[in-house]
Amino acid sequence: MSASTTIALYPGSFDPLTNGHLDIIERASHIFDHLIVGIGASQAKSTLFSLEERLGLLSSATKHLKHMEVAIIPGLLVDFAEQKGAQVILRGLRSETDFSYEFPMAMMNRRIGHNIETLFMATSDEYAYISSTLVKEVARLGKSVEAFVPQQVAQALQEKFK
Ligand code: ADP
Image (cartoon, rainbow, N blue to C red):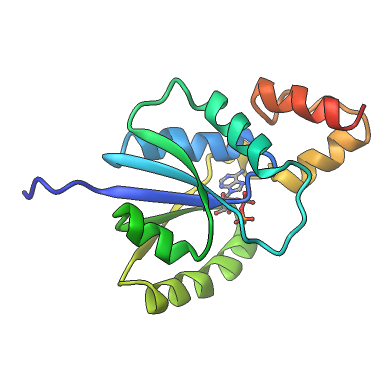
């Protein structure tokens, strides 16, 4: 057995962080030697929360975890992974729809990156239906989202839609 260190990068928009994301982060932090949760800065999507807000929420909701950090991905994902020494890109899978979206991205990243491996972690069944989009919609319509997101995020959403 080699003593090499495995660093994984879990990228996403995290707009905002949900219990589904947090579950993947917690489980991954026990598997890899080091986990970097990366917030993509260059995405075309418009977001509800600013980069700084998302960074703050992710940092506060994960401060109980060891061997991990939260970072902003300024440009291309594979370049950031290489710069950080990450051998693995980690993505969560909820459904076939996720898979169809993820698979070509994994192929492309392996081509344009230096043989970086994308690994998929299956959602826990209780979080399979949770997405940032649905959570925002429920919060926007004035319903509590405390069952779906960390408490800091629920509060931040309430503030946004006040
Ligand atoms: P992106 O905009 O890059 O898809 P997201 O923030 O929506 O980023 O999601 C980041 C990653 O987390 C993606 O791989 C997504 O499939 C996964 N993910 C999102 N919600 C869940 C969930 N409830 N359970 C497991 N994985 C999830």
